[in-house]
Image (cartoon, rainbow, N blue to C red; front, side):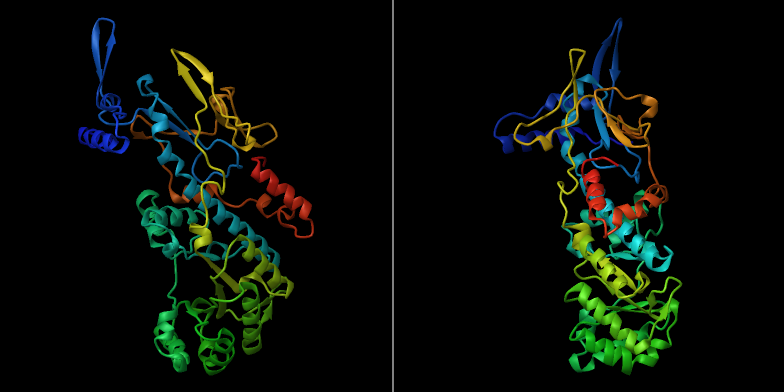
Amino acid sequence: MCPVVTEEKIQEAKVFYQMHFRQNVFDEEGWRKVLEITTTCLFLIVFKKYDGRLPIRIKAVPEGKIIPRGNVLFTVENTDPDFFWLTNYIETMLVQMWYPITVATISREFKKILAKHLKATSGSLEGLDIKLHDFGYRGVSSQESAALGGAAHLVNFCSTDTVAGLLMAQKYYGCQMAGFSIPAAEHSTIISWGRSREKDAFECLLDQFPSGPVAVVSDSYDIFKACKHIWGDKLKERVMERSEDSALIIRPDSGDPAETLLEVIKILEECFGCSLNSFNYKVLPSYLRIIQGDGIDLNSIDQILEKLSDEGWSAENVFFGCGSALLQKINRDTLNCAFKCSYVETNGKGMDVYKQPVTDPSKGSKRGRLSLRRNSDGLIETVEKGAGKPEEDMLVAVFENGSILQEYTLDEIRKAAQLSEEDLSPSQHNKEDRTLLEIHQKHIMNGVH
C-alpha cells in the first residue's frame, strides 16, 4: 500500500492544467483532501488521513474467469462522499483494461480453433499450449503494450517471443517462466550468406543446434525449391538424423498462407514420407514440422486447418505464429468495452442513471448498482438496479482505500481460463451448419451464453 497523490504532484498538476485549459479548473482543494481530511464527530475532532491513497473501492471478476460479452466486469465507487468526483476521474486509466482483456479473449479463440482441429485430426489435445506462438513484440506500439498483451496471451498458451510479457508475468503473477521459445533463424541470418549459399546457411544452423528443436525461415528466395532440393535432397540425411525432441521446423513466411503451406507439406511428404495416426490423418516424420507465422488471424488459421484436414493432414504437423492480429489489430470497440456511470447519490438519496441515445440504441448503458451472478439456468448475467444478492455476486473486492485486497497467480488464472467441453462442441464450429454457428456468434455478441 503506497500513496499515489503527493503535494508535489498536486502543485505540478495545478500548473499543468492552468496552462492546458487556460483557466482555473483544477480542483486543488479536492486533491489536497486526499492527503488529509478533517471531520467533526460530536465532542471531538477526528483527523482521518488517506496519506495520498485513493478512497475508492473496486470490485472485479476474478482474473481468467470466462464471462460472456455484455456483462459487468468491474465496478468502481468512492468510499467517502467527499470524493464523488474521483470515480470518473480514473476512468481513462481503468478503461484501458480493454487491451489485455481483448488480447486474452482473441488468444483463447485461437486456442478453441486449434483445439477443435487438433482433437478432430489426432484425438488428442497434446501440445495445444504451444500451438500458437506470440510474434507480436515488434508490432505493438510500446513496451507497455508488449508487456500487457504478451502476458494476456500467456493465459492461454506458453509459447512466445515477447519477453516483456514474460517479465510482467514474473514480476506481478508469481510465474518464474511463463513461456518458452526455440532458436530460430530470421532472414538476415540466411541472406547474409548470399543466394548461392542458402544450403550452407541452413547446414550451419543444423551444426549450431544439433539438439533441441530449431526453426529455419526458408522462403528467402524460393520456399518450394528450398524444401525440395535443399531440405529434401542435399540436407536430407542431416534432417533425418534429428529426433522428435530436436525437430527441424521449417518456416514459410510469404505468399497465400493456406496455398503455400499445403504445397510445402506435399513436397515434404514426397521427400520424407509420412505415416497415418490413429485417426487416419497423415503426419510427417516426428523430426520434421512446419510453423506458419505470416498472415495468421482467426479466419485464416481456421481456413488453413480446414484445408489441411480436407487433404488428409493432421493439425499435429503445424505450429502457428501470430503478431499484429494478436497484439495490435484491435481496439476498444473490438469487444465494445466501456466504463459508464450507473448510480449516484445526492444528499443521501440514491438514483439509478444510464444513457440511452435515440440515435444509437447500442450505446445504451446499464443502470443502478450492478452485480454479476449465475442464474438458475446456469447462465451468467448482470443484475441491475441494485437487485442483486451479495451472496450471489461474482465480483470480488480487489482494491479499497489504497490497498490491494486480492492478487492472482498466473497458474490460478490459467486454470480459470481452461477450455471446457462446451468450447469444443460441434454446434460452435460445425462448418456444415452455418445457422448454428451464426446463432452462437450472435449470442456471444449480445452477452448471451
